[in-house]
Length: 211
Image 1: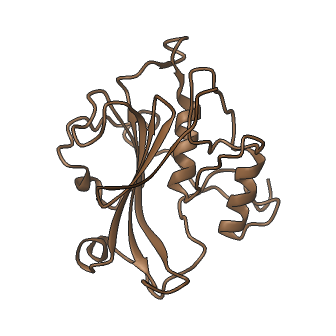
Image 2 (image 1 turned 30 degrees about the horizontal axis):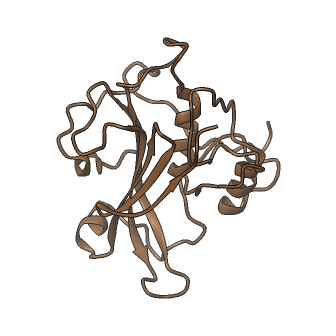
């Protein structure tokens, strides 16, 4: 498609295997310059066992204290809890594609929607009957606005999640040493609750009764 935008590509030793990062002792060590999707066949001790998946974002606060303050994303990772059953290997399991698609939305800076009338993968809950084959029209519209894309350009989810541009591109050192670094966790739990944490502190949660 002419003018199409491709944001995410698969890379690795064999091209199609998600790395297992069960052996990661501290999630801060994933600040390694790579936007990635990982699984944990043994779930991380730093994360609650009830989390289906977690999006971890490292960023730097820009224009701190001003009305136009925002977080510049330096790196993001998605971690999938492989101790849960997933389709198609378990027909009674959760739809893995839908879980990952939801986390990709966070990866790109999309927030939840609690309006069940929206065509969206960004509801703050998921159950075993939930299946999303693609981003909803509400998600696509939000991504077009966020990334200033025209109606014909968006064909996949993308890897930068801000509408403002800082004066310079921040780095790992800025996250660790600037005093404005933030580590954001967005945890999707199997009971339908999504918990938001900033620098380890719970700042918000949504709970929606599973459909």
